[in-house]
Length: 186
Image (cartoon, rainbow, N blue to C red; front, side, top):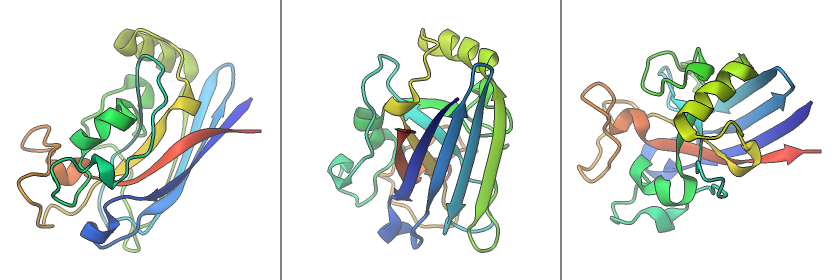
């Protein structure tokens, strides 16, 4: 078994009014990938998309900084993370191995902004879908970052914040609120 961990730290905290933080832990065996994400101080009582992001070519993904706020609106939006973090790869939803990113089966935070997500994923299924999508079966977890997304749809956002996938999944759904680099644990 190989273990990985990410310390998830706040993003956009000064704009969203919470300092979302937590951990993501991964246990990789020959047959499964166990994922455990525990978050605190997220926007309360709402669904939070969470994924690992990276580059299909195996380059190292990094946590964004305000340098990525290229339009200067004070937000690091999803589109601005691509140059340093790559693309959305595996969702931490009810079926990660389906790799169906836009859906409504992600964790929901409680009234205090806490949630814990746990899932054991069949590795062969995940690798097959990963290969189909990214032309490699190597998850390369130590080259990825974990993102947690989502703020209330009532929160005012400037028109410059990108990340709308359609009318149902707006920049409120996709706004990164926390991120952490995945590292191998000895």
